[in-house]
Length: 600
Image 1 (cartoon, rainbow, N blue to C red):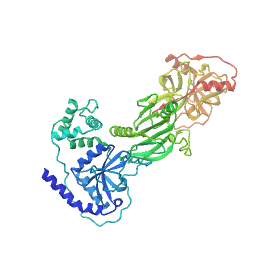
Image 2 (cartoon, rainbow, N blue to C red):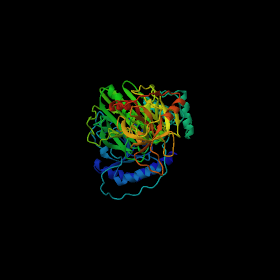
Image 3 (spheres, rainbow, N blue to C red):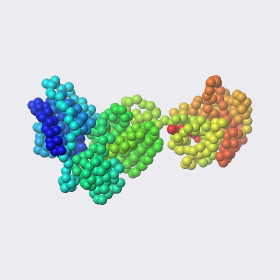
Image 4 (cartoon, rainbow, N blue to C red):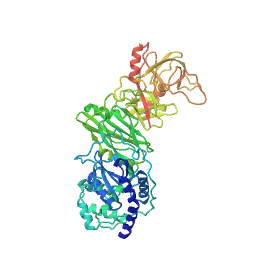
């Protein structure tokens, strides 16, 4: 095996030595490299460079800045590098997401130890990254035309000679505490380990390593060699291939973290968010959160974000004194937000990912959280102030909209609500006045009425007082309702008359009204001139026949009382006469009328 490996590597080296010589004759800024990995820790990058050096020639390691380290092979002229990249990927020697990289992207060299092929000045600390968004991984200026070079023949994939058991034990002892934990995390992800992630390799960890070795056709020793550790971590990280995970520094937001730059790119600032919209096929989005403030600011953000369309209603959420976590999920997306208050600044991020891709989403979320770094700046509160404004937008983000919104009204002091059956059909969630969840207590679909019970007790400002008698023909009536389905913050009054005390087909439980009602008014109370409730407005009939716009129908008070009695609710009856003052009627109507919202 060793002789075969040496022959294969010698063949590749012989074919590429001409390419390396030509490249080295150029200025460092005129040549390119094949970048095959990037690691967030120097020790990890050094270990990976050592592994690759046993498999291929010309392995180099460079700092990328921002705490990241690249492993690359080269240098080559660009046309040569493309052949090398194609051949190595085809042979399975390097990952599929390897790409062409410019010399100008590299900084101090760390591998091979003591090498400095770019003649860069030695620095004592990693350089800071200064980017608003990460550049596309494979973008580079058009290179000069170079002489053609011999085509590289295909060779089979090769493996470096593995370590002995004693060598594996020695190399394992050199691992840092975090590297030992990372291996346990990878084993747990692969389904071989279910104990604590503590970096301590006891009987459980050794058994899981042996099981993984057996499943992957390695010699079963319970101690992973350097190559086996690399193979395990490659399996663990394969789910992230193609996402372009790179460190992104946003100086205006004062945040630095790893992002999937192949899927998201900077779009705009809308305080308190820096928005990174989808640029790939997945449909992912990221928001950076950045604003000055205190605990009230943090708590306010927690409440506001739960009204946004990007934070679905279902999912765990937790608010602490100085931080909060929000997870929202539906059939389309999973949204996870983490934010915290430190030194008078609220910062954090939201990852929005398509539903059904949980393995990759959770791994990306781990990378974001692990790399999230606070910088001194905070986003200007005026950022994005010249953008499009709308009442259904918060910082340029769509407020969650109900599937249907209709009116309803209180019929007792505990907050029981009468509404139209249309408002409660096929709803995943029902709310009263936007934020109080409610359940259906009773309904009569044939008559178009439903009674709702709020999950938490309410204290209505006013409660309907019913007159269960038959209203007089041509008497004046009014309807209170959310005509524009919640666009206005209070119910409005619409005036009309009683045109008939029966429906068009003689239905005795209906009153026909001469009144121009809007869709949102349905479910609202119908008042007589004395301020008594005489019925509930029904929605416009749908069908082939279109009635004049001033024809509306109300369910009579007796039908409302009958369903309320079935539900165990006692209505408040009254016999008030005379004419109520318009101001008093308006105050009573707005005090008892509520917005009933049906959500997906």
